[in-house]
Image 1 (tube, one colour):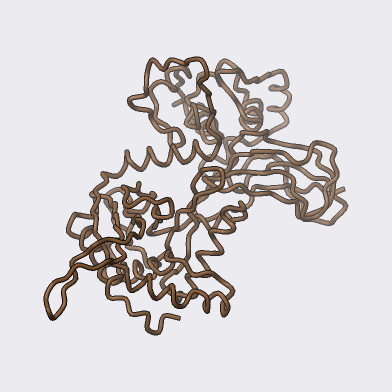
Image 2 (cartoon, rainbow, N blue to C red):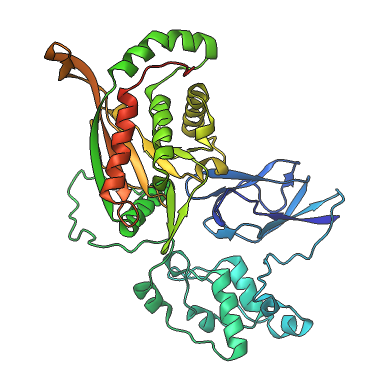
Length: 437
């Protein structure tokens, strides 16, 4: 029987780790080829991890809620299928520290009696426990290692660094309680001005956030903490667009098999404005401004659960209005059915959210990091308006909406942010519909 190492596969651009949310197979269970073994979650998308070979699950290196890095061995499957065997360690080599976890017969004998256990205050993954036993790190010593993971959890990198420092004579530990109190973690935003003195009264219902809501909350807090938000608001007369869509929507549905909504039309002209003002399509890395070559439009989608997800239309500027319509409809449908692929929620360079869907006329959207701007599309309303004619001004009923543009003041000043919003409005108001379909 061969031993197949089931590793966490690549889950999308920029994704370096995932959290195990469920095991579909237990030790001893038979697994068919391509059958799902476990489920994992990244920033916003749940994914299934299948086996590439048939066999029997014989080892699991992680449990539910453990954080696993891309490429790490999650489990071992015994199979009759011929495979290229590799050493089974459950540990990925770190080029800088690979000598740190070298196992010898002497280590194994010497460290057999070491027992490592988790406690309610201090959780250790199976991988961390394995490294500790291999390297002769006692429970007391492990308990004092500073953890950089969520809630102060000791990660693989933390313990490998400690082992390397210990061998070089630089190791130093502090009580774990001090770490949790003083350190700000990448996956756990610092909570500021937390409400105090909440009194529960008879009939109050306490609802625990689900995983996605916690991630959204963390992402929003982080965005407001990182980016100084500024907003510009512009009103646009979209009467021509409303009339044109009403005229062609039935024929479009018959011809393309798709409903055409206002969202792809607005995205089409936002893309044109981005080409006019490419410094809106940037990202910030410290003091370095990264001007993005591709225009990848994120579109916020409200889910049946009440949560939010932002699938991305890659290279949106290469699509016609028909192509954008199909992309918007497809991504929105699969987002609500939880069928998006990890790559489809990463790589966005500018985001659009249509708050008009909920009857909102305007709103201050939060920037979707690491982008620097986001546009909220307000509801289209019939409004009395002054219309300029050759014979003078007159009052008429027009279809109007408000564009709300939020941008990062570290890199986008009021002139750029305001002119961009104005240019989008100008494109919408000069709409003719010619040669769009």
